[in-house]
Amino acid sequence: MNLTEMLLKNGFMILPILICLTVSILLIVEKYIVLKKSKVNVASFTIKIRGILKRKEFAEAINYCTEEKSPLANILKRGLRKNKFGRKRMIETFEIASKLEIMKLEKGLPTLATLSKLTPLLGFLGTIISLTFAYFKLQEQQPNPDLTNFNNEIYGALISSALGIIVGIFSLIFYNQIVATVKKIVFEMEMVATEIIDVLDESIPSFADAEDDVNEFDEEETE
Image 1 (cartoon, rainbow, N blue to C red):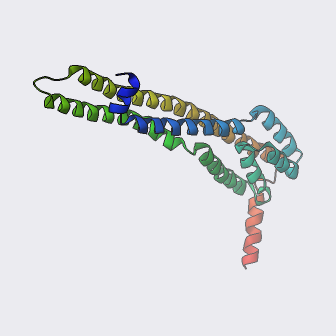
Image 2: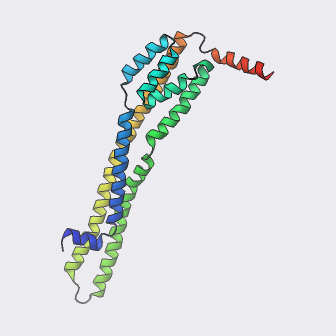
Image 3: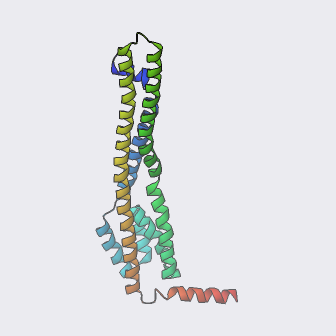
C-alpha cells in the first residue's frame, strides 16, 4: 500500500487539515499584500509633512496625505481636517482613525491564529480515531491478524498528526511575523501623529487654545 492509499484509507482528517492550510495561505497572501501597500518611508513622509505644516498649509498637507494612500496618511488626513477645532479634537480624531486603521491591518489575524492551534488538534484527533478503528479491526481478525494491514493503518494515522503539526507551525510562524509587522506600523503611526501635534504646537502658538474658542462659541450659540 503506497502513501496515497494509506492517506485515503486512514487519513480522513487530512481533508480538513488541507482546507485549513488553504485558508491559511490565502490569509497570509492577503495580509502581505495589505501590509506591503501600508508601508511608507516614515522618515521622508515625516519630513515632508512637517515642512508643509510649519508653513501652516493644512490644505496642502491633507492633499499630500490623500496622495500617499497609507494607513499613516489616512490617520493624519482625518486629524488635520479637524485643525480648526483645536488640539484636543484633533488628537481624538487621530485616536479614532488609528483604531479604524488598526482594525483593517489586523483583519484575518484571529482566524490565522485559530488555524495555527486548530490544525494540530485535528491531526491528533484523526490519529486517535484511526488508531481506535485499527485496533478494533485487529481484534476482529483474531486469532490470525493481518499485521501488514495494521501497520499500514498505523502509518496513515501518524501521518495525520504530522501533517496537522506541520500546518500549525507554518501558520504560527507567519502569524507571528505579520503581528510583528502590524505592531511596527502602529508604533510608526503613533510616533508620527505625536510629532505632528508637536509641530502644530510650535508653529501655531494659539493652536492649543483653539478648542477654548470653539467651546465659547458653542456656549454663545446655546444661549
